[in-house]
Image 1 (cartoon, protein in one colour):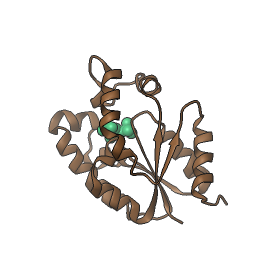
Image 2 (cartoon, protein in one colour):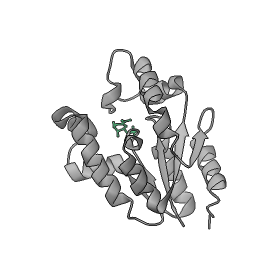
Image 3 (cartoon, rainbow, N blue to C red):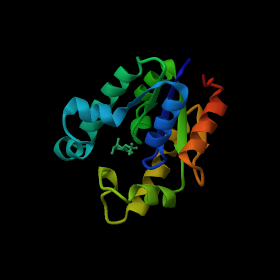
Image 4 (tube, rainbow, N blue to C red):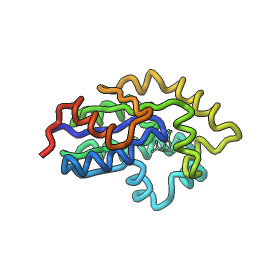
Length: 170
Ligand code: S3P
């Protein structure tokens, strides 16, 4: 069976939905951001602070290339992973690409309880979310399946992914 790759903006529920999916399907769960932090030995926030976003994107692409080789996995990616075609190509080799979506207001609500997202540490995070979403829209739309998470629990979203991909639970 193909890997399930979760893409989508920060706060669309990739991590939580990934956890549920991996449990339901008996797939291994890998999270690109967690792998980046493990590999670098520092947090994403520190990577942005010390090296800047372009270097982070390089590291992210290398990690995604490695994770794309895994089989029977749910791969959860960071919100900006879609920006590089190379990442999409690698992830698609063994996987079906899902994109989770939510409104800017919901994203703000889901991301405002912690400060571990360097791109949203600005005076007006809602405005920033709207700008980033607008810019990234065509990239997110490259996914094979789009799933609106608005008003749905992570369990409902996971069930919808299983239904739409036709992947069997056993
Ligand atoms: C980013 C999303 C983050 C993380 C980094 C950059 C982005 O991941 O990779 O802060 O560019 O949207 P999550 O989507 O898991 O928060």
